[in-house]
Image (cartoon, rainbow, N blue to C red):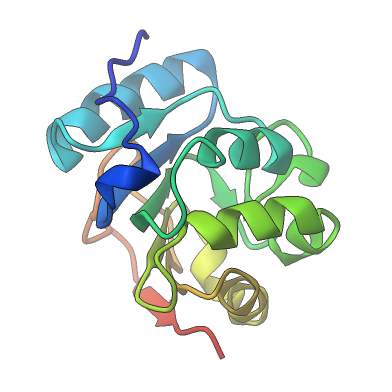
Length: 172
């Protein structure tokens, strides 16, 4: 699915409060999540559906000015071990893979708006791994919000049909 995003602002325009949405999964899943993301987050959100690992995530985010992203949202498959950006665990968004890529951490941390930034993991189960979430929140200096249960697929901010809850951990 072709995505039309707003122009990326330049540093001299002093952008802030931007929302960036990272969509992952199979081609069909990315297409479904992309169409619902535009409806949910609106025309000013930046949507990307070709991120497959931490390196490609940092390459996308490196296009944004420093401290411009207030909300970084992930939509797709998640597990206790992290967010499945690609096919295997080496591609997951989690503390292990972030720690293995300090340049990506530097880039991501730089574009987030600081401790007021929120990373939303709109994926299954990652919310149960509070130890990993806490490390990621600290590494990226942002609050991290994740779901503990099984999500309603390609829905955003779902209440959940199970006993899952949203958890938010602050950077400490």
